[in-house]
Length: 557
Image 1 (cartoon, rainbow, N blue to C red):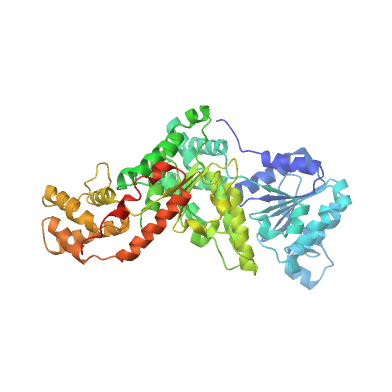
Image 2: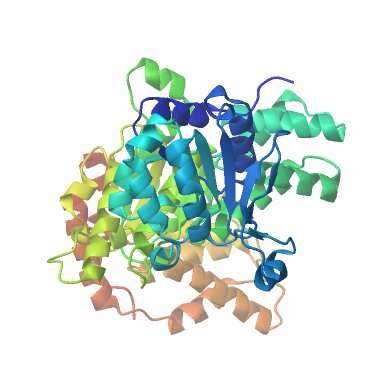
């Protein structure tokens, strides 16, 4: 078995300590396996193993100290014997230190006089008035005695920004511990397979390594074990489903494997051809694109009125390029609690980076891409912070995530947000033209080649196709793709309710006669989005034919 767990983050901590950046090192991770790794490293690395004292504090267990065998034993403080001490500790003359402030005060003189290591684990929130944690850390960070004696404070938390204020974070070294790397995930899979006596060929190994991207060590091990206990194998589909559940539990992301392809999207041939040429081809032939100096696409903005298929197109794109589809849960990012929105955005972007390359779908991206006006309160300040976070992330040169954003109001987006380099392509999705409407109807009737949609029982397909083209399509000008899908559904319902053997042309005539949209309003909306297309789309081939539908006569009444 090759490989092992990465210790780079621990070696970085040693280097920072030896360089006297700060004696306080904060590790950002919620992975239980990383904590085990940290304690093993402290036991064996010369920088720490030579310490006179090694302490560990846990909020539940209190303060403990490493004994000569390398095990942590509860630390007992000698006190004057009294009935109270005997009652609280069980040992006459000794008492356990379970409070954080007590533990910090107990270790403080040792940090200043002897080489001492203090590990503070699983700290998630801080009530400074109760614990004094930040005061202690700030004091130790600049204390010459702590530095000169080689003492080190190792703090583990899931989020340093939530635990420590800005001033304290400036005085400590914060190290973000990555989730499991490709090599670590491979190592864990090989190790688990060997222990469970499973054969894993190289194809499955590679697929499992890719499927578990973005997970921490503990999550990878847990998913593998759950799959094994359920199926007696490392079932790839189950592993993917379990990962999706874990990511979904974060509340800020959703992961799915889209089934829809471009064949399930009726019409929009110019858009599909453009995306196949400039996006899909580059992603599928990445090595060749690199030889030509053609960069991978960084972002695509889909804009247009509601119901025109922007979200479906994003999922189909992920299917075409065989990349994971990650959806940013925009409705869960913002919070009424100060600071939580920024934390949610950081968490989401960190997860996305670890799971990339992937298609990252951001519906209603104007929630983040719209620069706020004058900041008058903390809510405005928080919105501005979230905007800045997202903007900075979009501009990262090493970002591997391909962002597909949708918006109904492109003119609300900040210019800095949609410039080239953040979004390479701005693609308009207008109301479908005649051929597109016919294609959409055929897709939902299962008549379009390659579609996944099941064909319902149909009476006289040739007559139905003729009626769709000659009667229904002319009367559905201004309809969205969603409304055309609803039209098909109503026809199927009518045929079913009447007891017919299948859907007929007459079913479509009848439901069409009852289906109404605000046509004049829809035409005004169509003209507005055409102007938006002219304003934002910088590829002339995408604009060809967009004006055609606006010159047709109004639909039959």
